[in-house]
Image 1 (cartoon, one colour):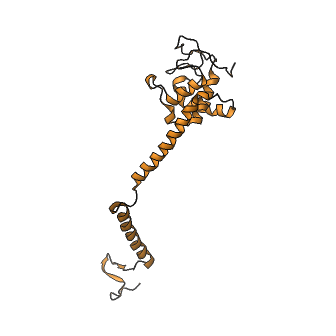
Image 2: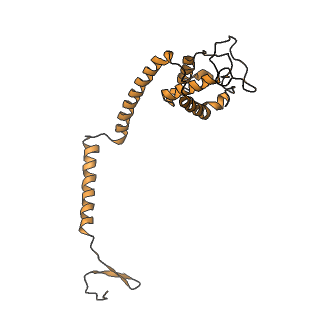
Length: 195
């Protein structure tokens, strides 16, 4: 590098004896920079000035509404078939139901189904009905007045039926220190796999 001050690539100022070169930016970089400016202007005109396209929030609203419509149609179809459902005998479906039960239901109904805050799921006294379809309805719609949330907002219909199938296997079992019966009318319960 030359210290010749007549060299046009050297800038006029220096700092501590160090002189800076006036390097030109590569042409591809400059054109890319210009293209980003043009893109930003076009984007602003298209979305913000002329409103030709949806912004992210509006697009999300449209997609969410379409998804909710599909979900509502599926939900109403499932609700129409609840009365005809039967508990699954497929061990893999019952195992999936057990995993969901342990992660989401055991906090209120105990791991063995003996009942804590929620009712005992093992005895013959059922508050909301003892049929399998009654169990599915209670899980699906919840019992907000008693503190049970509506699980249709969190579980798919196949997960609800899997949990209900697992709960069906708990009927008639005798866990240690169960919660006392909450209904005075004895209900017909299903068979247990554990007896």
